[in-house]
Image (cartoon, rainbow, N blue to C red; front, side, top):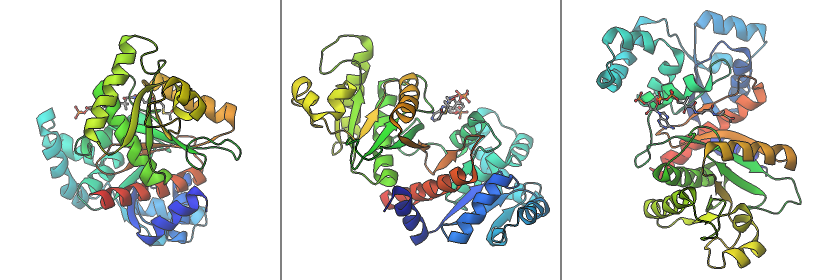
Amino acid sequence: MSLFEKLSAKAKSCPQRIVLPEGTEPRTLTAADRILGDGLAEIILIGAPDEIMHMASELKLDNIGKATIVNPADEAVIDRYAPLLLELRRSKGMTEEESRLTTANPLYLGCLMVKAGDADGQVAGAMNTTGNVLRAAFQVIKTQPGISVVSGAFIMLLPEGLKFGTNGILVFADCAVVPDPDASELAQIAVSAAQTARDIAGIEPRVALLSFSTKGSARHERVNKVIEAGRIAHEMAPNLIIDAELQADAAIVPNVANTKAPNSSLNGRANVLVFPSLEVGNIAYKLVQRLGGVQAVGPVLQGLAAPVNDLSRGAFPEDIYKTIIITANQAIGLKENA
Ligand code: ACO
């Protein structure tokens, strides 16, 4: 079974309620129609009902009638969710009037539905920028207990013949959100990436915190940050197999690990690679993807109290369909671990 066959089967076995705030956007609607047809999730579309149904009929979509539609122009909807937003943002200076205006923003309304327990996750970004999608999630849904920083992982699916990771699967993080994490943030990224490895990649995590130094081969404050992150991550998750301050080859090549890091608990068999900064993580995943012919699935946002995922504005319906499946699986994983 491929990764997506497994994720689809799990999503189908326990359908989650996924909000799509860009409810009138054609690629999003096409993906929603397929999800509903396949029975993989319950879909909540935010938008004007007549516009959504008009677009669905233009696109000849048969299943959109099964979706719940929430109209952000409906005063009753604003009455229901604005007080929650005001409660969350009052200390940041938000007024009642601002809370009503912001609640009418579909990105915020979707997150408020998740926060209120009326939905299990959100997928957006076919029309909105990453910053806008993430900010709504950060401000409304916030992070999981013990985590203060949201980050983004990619599941890297290696072509046959490349025998790294577990069954040719590796998780890379952070590749999408936190430009310059400190040691504590890096530790949180490592622990969150382990959760993504379990819940989405379906592998038992073996986490390497990467550096340009292996076990003291170089001295630098950036190396110290990675060592300290390893210590904190170990405290946060004592049962997690994790090792810090490894070069990439010592993390994933057993022969190199034997020479450079003979006492590493990973034995050169890491399947979760944590990068010391966003520059490294973002560049690394793109190079591995392009030069190695590797399929990169993501970014999967990790660390939020309930899942929200961001799409590329160039996303195809297939990408949106898969992102909804991932989000449903994250929601199931969070409930299972609660
Ligand atoms: N985790 C949790 N909360 C966060 C995070 C985070 N990583 N970053 C910011 N926040 C919170 C802040 O605490 C703040 O909350 P508050 O309003 O309650 O005080 C709120 O979000 C806004 O914080 P700002 O510091 O104003 O953040 P800003 O909105 O300027 O930026 C953003 C956030 C857009 C996510 C920024 O970190 C960013 O641009 N990151 C890089 C994203 C990117 O471009 N990635 C590369 C492309 S993606 C790809 O290639 C796959």
